[in-house]
Image (cartoon, rainbow, N blue to C red; front, side):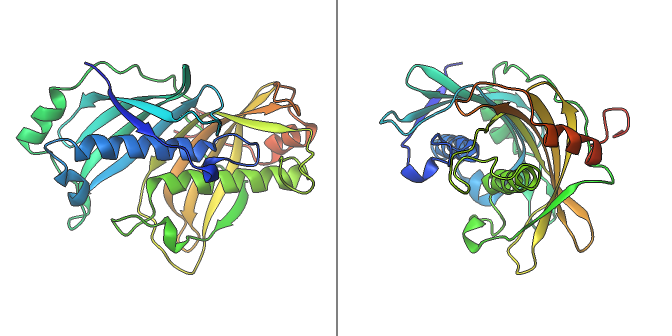
Length: 291
């Protein structure tokens, strides 16, 4: 099946402190592509009725930059079920593929508070466009344990979407804010753009998986992201994070990320000693413990 292609113009504000397109904005490009796809389908009403994101899996392959070249997103329909379906994407800038992603979407009844089956015509339309979409390798089944770094998250009014809850893309912002706060608490000045901006460290997100477990709404009281460290390699580490409501410890989203440490030029280099030491303090539960 031929890909559905959407061109997404870049904005200056899509860049982050490392002068490339921020990883969360890549997820925004996915959203632009699938909204365009659905609005140009016979089933555009699904956007208003309650299509929600269940899970994102994103591989970051190369940096995208604000250099006059726009972003092209190729989209395919993957597996289709009774109430949900998968989409696959390639994100390109010029000749380079900068990211690949998978999204699980579900039809949701907000009144009943549960997934709702797709109508026969809806399911048949998606199934007729379904193709084999390669699965990504598993990141493991890590979970936040008893010890973790906690960072408060205040929801902004502008974080909300037309459903009246926090948009799925903003969750990536929250997880990023928490891991930056965690790293800065261990390695002051570790982020380009903080302080003098002359850090000898760069940090590159290689993969992020995020699963949504509940709705987050605007309120004055903050939520929190609790981050723990799973696998530690020579130049990379696996982080696991829970977005929680501190009032009742309800987990509203879970994220697993692979982060690569680089030198000032972005060349992968050994993890700093404070990060390795923190992995023993804020250790995530591993695959056996998290079951």
